[in-house]
Image (cartoon, rainbow, N blue to C red; front, side, top):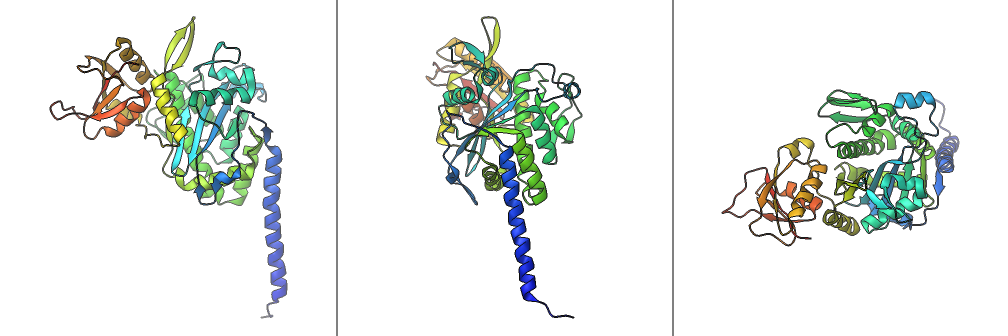
Length: 413
């Protein structure tokens, strides 16, 4: 056996190491060049000091927007994806994503949410991007939440398809079948490995009695599945797959000028362990209302104030119950000082996915809405209290509640 020539081995290792570093640097450089970076004036970037290798040191707030821009789709793709012929740039998805050391919270904004445009006219929030661009949309959601964003991320329909496929698809499990000829969704109950086309049909579906809420819930479930896939070892631990995902993501995103590809990968790695516990997702408390003949979704002020306060303080949101868990609850609403308040709370909770019953008048009407729960139902009551902006109290021994029964005593605003 010939002697090992260590100088040659060292030289070979050096070449491999330098090549690897050069390859990685080229990957980030080329991906960064592909990013469409824009200045978003209403966003003040806190810089790269917010994330460390072991995790985030403080909360980071990102506006994630799904644009329905069809400009780069062929006629054949439009037919396959059931997107129609609309040529504007409205938003199918608007999410406030808060990354914290202890978890991730997501607030979804209903696409028909009523907001004020820069000229003072009422518009749906999904029109703001087309009317005023990223600046206007970021400023609008910051005004609603009373908090500042750190980053802006926008993805188009075609980019959505490519990103899902680059990540290797997503697995989504359905409790019941989903058929929607408008979006193209055609899924049996059970778990599905979805590619980009399937995932787009799934998240765009408005099928169901609570169409807007159901759509938002599907988008939240998809985002959780994609985050789980993108931060898995199959992606982050595979240099070839990571390069493919990073490049594809970069080519498909419009971001603020403070967000780079290395920064995104750094955040993904920092959040990997946190994401194992899942995402806290909630839809902004609101209810449908027709104004001047136009159907909107209108924010419910007490619930919005409670939700915004938690985001401002960087607090975790309560875990949302599944559809099956919601069905097992009996929610009774009792009117308080303002008779109309009970009706509004009923509408808000229905829009949030709950079936409720109006159950007369509270004997001792509270000033602030009160959510009463018995032993074992405290977690569900916390969620309802967040939605209605109320406070949770325990049922008293001489007035016990049946398991699964929660009473909402409407207060006076």
